[in-house]
Amino acid sequence: MDRNNQYVHTKIEKIIEHNESTRSFVLEDMFTSEPGQFGMVWLPGVDEKPISLSARNRITVRKVGPFTEKLFEKKEGQYLDVRGPYGRGFPQMGFSTLIGGGCGIPPLVYLFSKSGTPAQSFVLAGKNKDELLFLDEIIKIAEQSTHYQGHNIVAVTDDGSYGKKGFAADANIPEGSIYNLCGPEIMMKTVAEKLTAPVKEGGYETDPSKIYLSMERYMKCAVGICGSCSFSGKRVCADGPVFQYDEISSLPHFNEFARSRTGEITELKELRK
Amino acid sequence: MPKLDLEIPLVNGCGTGSYLGIAYELEKMGIKLGAFVMKSGGPCSEIANVREEYRWEKEKKGNPNPTVVYTGSILLNSMALPTHPIESWVRELKNSELKMPIIGSVWGNKPEDYALLIEMLDPYVDAHQMNVSCPNKEAGEKSVMEFMTAQILAAVELAREATKKPLMVKLSPNENYVAIAELVKHHADHFVCGNTVGPGLVIDIYSRRPVLAGNYGGMSGPAMKPKIMKMVNDVYEVVKGTDVGIVASGGISRWEDIIEYSIAGASMFEVGTCAFIDLKGGTARGRKTEEIVKFTNDLWNGVQKFLKEENTTLDKLVGSMVKNG
Ligand SMILES: Cc1cc2nc3c(=O)[nH]c(=O)nc-3n(C[C@H](O)[C@H](O)[C@H](O)COP(=O)(O)OP(=O)(O)OC[C@H]3O[C@@H](n4cnc5c(N)ncnc54)[C@H](O)[C@@H]3O)c2cc1C
Ligand SMILES: Cc1cc2nc3c(=O)[nH]c(=O)nc-3n(C[C@H](O)[C@H](O)[C@H](O)COP(=O)(O)O)c2cc1C
Ligand code: FES
Image (cartoon, rainbow over all chains, first blue to last red; front, side):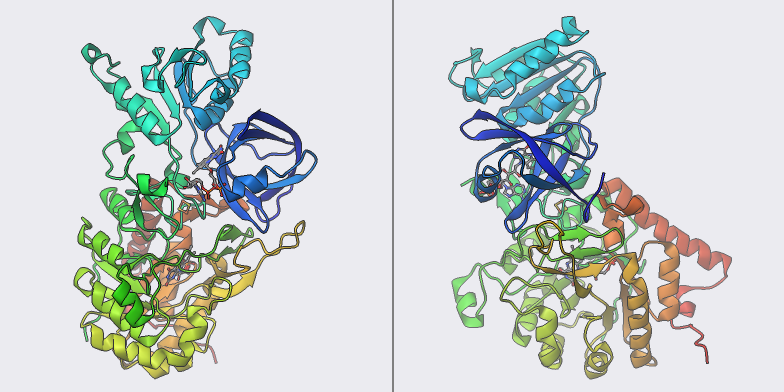
């Protein structure tokens, strides 16, 4: 595959509209990657942002600001420039449980669909049914799998429009030998706390090193040199984005702080404003 | 004035992995670095009075992405000094649990900026670097490099008055560094040779736009080493016989590079691009923290092994190049 200064210049084969603010772009050409890794998507003259892969040749994007708005103007047949893959992805092991919230579901779908990955359970959480991205695809993958017996699909929604009403941590999480989490940091933290809590408190007493979380921070270089994406001392682009819970749970910045675009340590709740 | 004397004369490049949290993580994992260089702080303040009095901003965002591009042989960056208020740097430094010495770094728009910033950081750092050599800028700005050539003597003199700690002036390979070194050598303890080279330009053939959002980018990595090697040797000729030390910063990727730089005249070494990015196979891949530790420690172990085998010391090697003709 040709690369221009690391970028793959690739045609948009197909655009899938999941809901008002979420779209997938299926790309003709793509570098090889592992589930959980991300690419830097460049719109010349606009900006370049980190986006995870939701399949070997697909990205799934939520429209949240200037860059993603511009990306949503792209039509089928037009081109995108993407470089990568960056970071370390999810472990691929049997009898794992994947827990995804909202925009955290797509990277896990890639993991779920990867051929040869043995039986996995999937917990989907979203505000409402529309936000349970790839629900149909997940069910289809499970049905077609030779490991179907082992698959267990659970959904929860904030408003109860599909599955049980509640947040990810309220779901009846199927037990696994490892847990792969992707979603808002607060959701991942709550779920990880439940998984590690004592059984008598409704927890699973899971070893924290068996829980994997996919982190997000403000990225510039994506190659570990600028420090922009660091929280405490971990650089998300190079050490992550997937971390073991025991690597990060006691770091002061976990679920609390991020560096802003200027590099200043800022409270996460300030940045979200 | 005291020269900075480190147990291990190897430090990280300024602005490369240059946040204290990262340093702390590296230290926990056993990295052999003599000191840690913080990312350049600059003329930004959260205090309105300070902003008014010194004509400072609150913050400077730096360029949008892409800020880094790798051509397969050279890394270019156009970060353009993203800067947050100096007070938040001071808070970070105050809370630092780092054991190794810290080298501060500052950039400014005018000579007084350097002195004031150095004064503010002085209680929390062990030495100061003056970044008067970054070639990167945001649209409509002047780069520190262009700006400083005119006023460098005033800036270094004022900075010298602001601190008793070792003062390191980071020279640009893109300006007349020999003349500048001559001009300020009586006020500096070290010259850092150099900063990123160029800037250079990489154009995307489909959009016909520069890949870097800031259009041009300073060049670093192993391909820049011969350029910086000559710079080190040229500046060594200027400071030979004085107490001024030379810090080599450019393209160090193997222990042999450190030996080579010492022969050219350097007594301290900064490793940036190659410590943080694995450039093997024509692609750029961020190194994990443990890889950075291994890479850096291998550099230093290699140097020590060589010195032992050759029955020599770095001190003896400094400036020992035998020139032809
Ligand atoms: C490892 C990683 C993987 C990601 N994967 C996906 C994905 O698969 N799908 C998806 O829709 N989004 C993903 N994101 C988030 C995506 O990068 C942001 O939504 C996007 O950058 C927003 O840009 P904007 O200009 O549209 O919005 P803005 O208004 O600029 O920002 C909206 C939000 O996005 C964050 N953001 C902005 N710029 C960056 C940046 N350079 N790096 C990181 N975060 C940024 C901001 O902090 C803010 O919370 C991922 C982020 C990271 C770090
Ligand atoms: C991403 C990046 C950011 C940098 N930021 C700074 C900076 O803030 N201040 C500075 O004096 N030099 C900065 N530099 C220059 C480096 O400190 C170093 O001098 C240069 O990269 C050459 O060394 P190397 O080839 O080992 O990277 C930066 C370099 C890079 C690649
Ligand atoms: S974006 Fe991770 S270090 Fe630059």
